[in-house]
Image 1 (cartoon, rainbow, N blue to C red):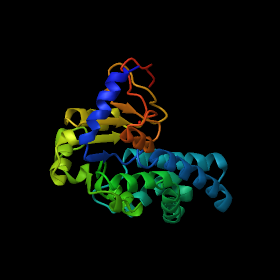
Image 2 (tube, helix red, strand yellow):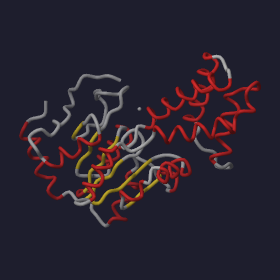
Image 3 (cartoon, one colour):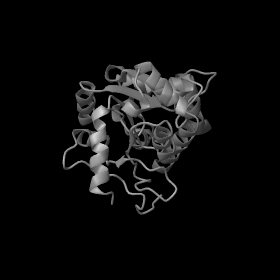
Image 4 (cartoon, rainbow, N blue to C red):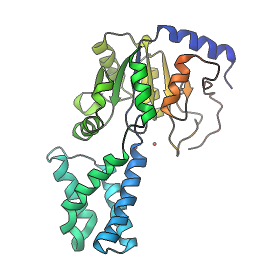
Length: 264
């Protein structure tokens, strides 16, 4: 367990904090959970609406999700065209004629489930009254900007950087420097909040940010020995407010001796 002195010292240093950088997927929005929910719902509809056997429907949606996560974008095609091709392949020869209709239903359901939670919206609005906010996300440009636009994220952030639009991606120091330069702030005035140790946390540390906050997902709930060490670990991104408020109930600093366990 981190010492009370270390925690107090860190929280006192937050007085010079001006800027908070956030990751997008599985930090602000539960992308993996939303995609899983979408495919479960769609499998039910394939059976109910089109008479496809349950096990076949489950295999179709699982096949699509696997290929989509492996390659969510294609530089030579529009998002709609690429995803329709993926659905056509997942549906197979027998059901490929449904690809366009199923893709459109998938897209609707995806953004039905992938929404900013009300408490996350409230947090962002509250933080923006006091801090500059930045969004730094790795991923294909078209796919990430689709999320940004459909979730209306521009209203919450002073800068938004998508790695595919730049020569760098997290954890490369330059992408954090770019965000700092855009906002005219120093790294020591900033913290990074994200779910991936190997990109968000490592990048924040190597860029010399004032601190890092880790929001672990279910299959990586604790640090192992060689992991980058975040300053704070929280169960949900909205717990960040408690850290910044420096209250007695702020989450403890993560200790490097945490039990190992084995993130989008």
